[in-house]
Image (tube, rainbow, N blue to C red; front, side):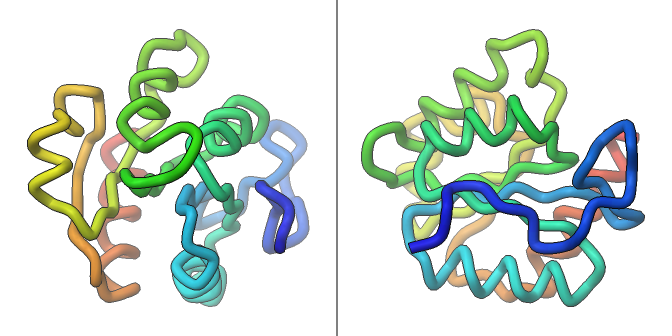
Length: 144
């Protein structure tokens, strides 16, 4: 099992140690295959990617590494995606980080109030890596 948050590429910036030209993305998902697939694709497209296996590790990684975008699953053990989103959006240090909810349970996202919790976008799984990249890029452009 991989550590909860690890850069996929070498650091380039002094101000944000993991930032690259395309940006830093944090993928928070309890399924290793999902983390790996999206991480490999986004890395191949020039992004630096960190991963976390649940919401608790995701919140910690977001606070430490300051990603440009967070891709968050909903159904995870320990701390779920809604709770993690509420924690991040309730913290003055992390509230401006865009959060994209990526879930296999779209009705759960609606019922549990993913957007009301502060998520900027939600997509359903399965999601093509290319589609995820487009949404990540749009969120980065909006936040700039």
